[in-house]
Length: 306
Image 1 (cartoon, rainbow, N blue to C red):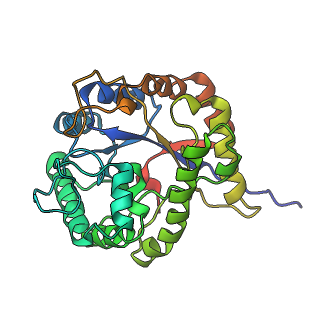
Image 2: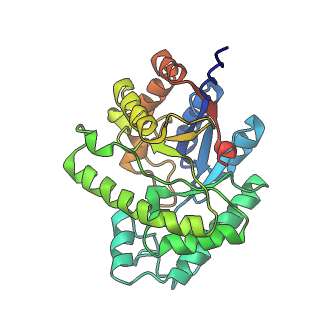
């Protein structure tokens, strides 16, 4: 008598909307996506102009909320005019400015630790609970030196999950401009090196990640499916019997109007771009939902990361 072959496990897809709290307009679009099942969780910028209102809405709708640690944009949460994290105007140094200062030895990691603690405690006050996880705005959590302080601080607060921004098959995304690809490959290499640090502190992350190559106008159904398939091909084996978790990083929302939103310095071009609404349309489309079903996926959240 032949034995029945066990059915394939149904894997979990976490669809995270980044930059929650950046502006009321952006948040309105994110909420629409959540209520439509197009995103399954958000990560909050606690120094975002609309953070307090965003948290009230998230509590009302039961949205899973993580912390989007911000060391690069707007004003810091920890108030210290002598902190090494800011420039002469009192703003955080920016995506590349922070990285350059870190490489040049101008960033005091004690200041990084204080800022992480301040943002975690601000989140706890705003949301009245722990974050589902903590990741990094512009992937700062994997930077050399920062990742050690980051993991140590998460462990101190009993937070066990983060994002590991390594998109398998990224090099095959031939639509990505070289300048962007060079930056993407740099932080992916840093993420590879951060793995051992996260593992040392028992910080877990989804089994697969994608979304680096599918931001804005690059978010097409074909590109999304290519990225998802590459992650599956890397992770699935003949003996895969336990459900795996995959995270799709997204940046949807209604466009932020000039003069509204931001983290203290007004809105940036990214938040004001029509790309935010374009991402909303793709994520809410029936074609994308068919792809998820075809790939044997159930929607999930960071609570599924074991």
